[in-house]
Length: 198
Image: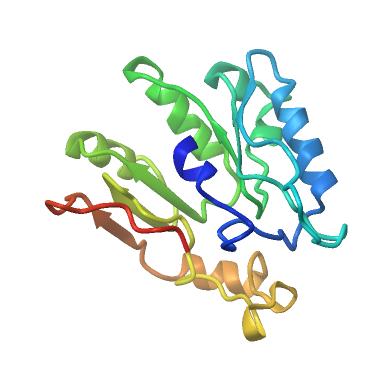
C-alpha cells in the first residue's frame, strides 16, 4: 500500500487538491488520530511540496495512520477513527481470527454503510464477512480495486460536489431501495501487472 501511495504525484495529477477539506483540517485530523495510544503515521501526513493549491482546499500527501483495533473501538476513539474524509487519508489496523468479531462490530458501528472493499482470496472468509455486513456496493477479491460507489450516488452537474446527492434523504432512499451490489475480482490473470495510476 505504501509503495502505491508513494507513486502518486502532483506532477501527473495522481495526487491533487481535496475540495472538501483544507490542508490544515486534514493534517489536524491526521495528528489527532496519530495521538491515540499505540497509533502511528505509516506514511504521508505532510502537505504536498511545491504546489500552488489555494488554502481553501486540501493539499496533502496520501496518508495512512495505524491504530490498534482495541484502541480504535474505544468509545472516545471510534468516531475519530471512522470519520470519513473525502481526502487521501486512511486508518489501518491489524486483526486476526480471534479478533474478527471485533472487526464486524466496527463495521456495524459505522453510520452510513455506503461502500466497502474486502481484499481476500479466501472464499470462506469472504462469505463470512459478506453475510455479516450490510454495506451497499462491495468490491470483493484479491484486488477489490475500488471503493467508490457511483452506482448509488450522484455528484451534481459536471461532477461538482456542491450539487451532489450524497447523504440527502433522496440519495439514502435510493441506496437502500436497491439490491446490494457485490463486485467480485478474485482471479489475477497470468502476466497481469498493475496499471499506472490515473
